[in-house]
Length: 176
Image (spheres, rainbow, N blue to C red):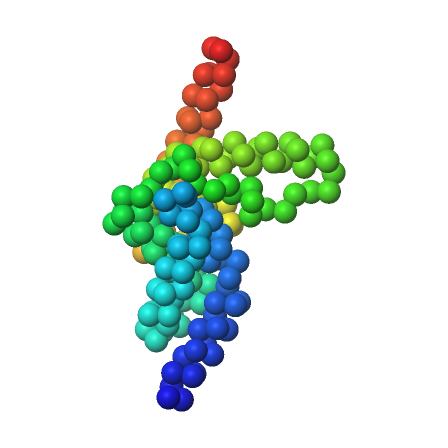
């Protein structure tokens, strides 16, 4: 019974110290058919089940990011519930500046970024989110299970795709 108690204490410490990471990933993949609370619970279950297998070869936050991303991506792949148009906003995760005009401009930019990122597939969405979180390529590589070279190429392509989406959207607005 003592072993279970130790695991519970480690689990509570881990989930408490990284709850922002878990919430961010779950918010990114949440939709009406994949509610935040359900995704969060699934991630917690995955963390609980994998806690004893964590070997400490990567940072704990890297392992948590990877587990959360894999859990959310798997949820959408296996359930067919993914609808990119219904994902929650990235801007809900960022604190606004105090200046009202600057805050409005930033909120508009974040809303546009969110619309563009929502059009990406689950893997590309995870990669660009990690890059936007300023994670180094080696850490993204550990989280995603891809080589650093592959990460660099894919992020470059994702940026090009987002730029193309933005240009298409701008053209569409001009023709109206």
